Amino acid sequence: MTESVLVCGAGMVGTSIALELQRRGMKVTLLDRREPGLETSHGNAGIITRTSLVPINNPMLWQQLPKLMLNQSASMRYKLGFMLKNTGWAIRFLLHARPSAFERTAKALFDLIELSRSEHARLIKEAEAQHLVQDDGWLFLYRSMKDFNNAAFLRQTYQRFGLDMQMLEKGDIAAMEPGLKPIFEQGVWIRDTRSIRDPSALVQAYAKLFVTRDGTLAKANLAAIEQSADRWHVKASDGEHFSADKLVIALGPWSKDFLARFGFQVPMGYERGYHMHYSGSGRGEGTDEVTELSRPIYDVSAGYVLAPMRGGLRLCTGVELADIDAEKNFAQLELAEASARQAVTLGERQLDEPWMGCRPTMPDCRPVIGAAPGQKDLYFAFGHQHIGVNTGPGTARILADQIEGREHKLQSEPFRPERFIRPRKQ
Ligand SMILES: Cc1cc2nc3c(=O)[nH]c(=O)nc-3n(C[C@H](O)[C@H](O)[C@H](O)COP(=O)(O)OP(=O)(O)OC[C@H]3O[C@@H](n4cnc5c(N)ncnc54)[C@H](O)[C@@H]3O)c2cc1C
Image 1 (cartoon, rainbow, N blue to C red):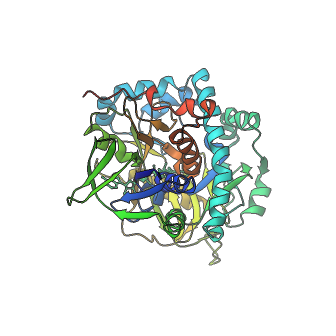
Image 2 (cartoon, rainbow, N blue to C red):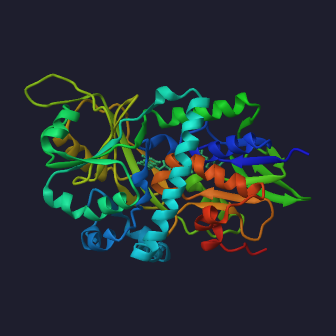
């Protein structure tokens, strides 16, 4: 008999899972309160890269900590209330920056990224979405040799994992990106990187592929889940009801609160981020030439990413540790915008208000992928921090193998839910 599955959440993670389970012959229903790809999977920088193997809590965090504690940095800020409420998460997050813990995470993320790369390549082709993706790499840029030297650990790590990168002198940077003002002393071109020119359009192309192949996509604001008679039931806030043999929770940053209602405690932190779109970029004063960037740049010294997208240049901020629903604070974006204006001539703001989203982050910066502890036929796939667009398709492969009972232990072990989540109290 064909097995049926409900996948809750149509971001990059849930949509990739729905497609993969469908490919394996299951009857899949994908549920979301919005159209696919309109939340966290919309507002990101759209970068699919191997550099994501280094999480934010890497051994360099220790030396950065005194400065970060001052809460003035563009790359990471925190709301004190959030830190006090989440001291357990924060301590575990810091402890995972130890070299031994970092090594385990880097290796696990590298494998997940590799798995995702080939899956993305296949899906992009099948979804006829090649026009949304570019293969020109991305640039890490440093305003001083001191900043460049401070990042030596990252480059050593990238080298160890065999990343394809090239050092750039000032003149090389100007030749590659003539739109940039000459403020960068040194750069690194991470060549084996893809960038998405419209991340939500890519998720929507994947969702369309799923529907074309007879998948069911339904709009529902999910309120509750329960299991009875070997079936899982999901209730929407308008009373609509869905049921299937198996249930996957892939609600991104909302997974924590949703599962709390069902008795699971998920130690997830929120690394909030903002973006704004601007029309064009140019060489600046004295010229009206407008030159678009041809690939994303990461101004490491100033802590922002600027990515050419369909809707203009997208400026993405670093991290704000705060509650999912805390008041928005545009200070980091203002700071990033001022810094970006030193590097390029940004045109007009294209959005009425900056976009804000939450990177869902587990203490070890590894996503949760696998069977829910103590529960039959319930599966989790969330906590993809800065890399969910990149690693959605690899997540789908690992989870689908588990659901089919063909788990590759080495592949799935680093992501198993039990490392943080206990069986719920009945
Ligand atoms: C500023 C910024 C830059 C980033 N840059 C990158 C990058 O360059 N590369 C990269 O790989 N990652 C990046 N990320 C991270 C990436 O965006 C996330 O890891 C990823 O989008 C998470 O995908 P998801 O499917 O788990 O969650 P989401 O995309 O948030 O999907 C969850 C879905 O669940 C739905 N949902 C929630 N609650 C309910 C409910 N009760 N009922 C029904 N539906 C519900 C939502 O509507 C949503 O569609 C960035 C993030 C930010 C904030």
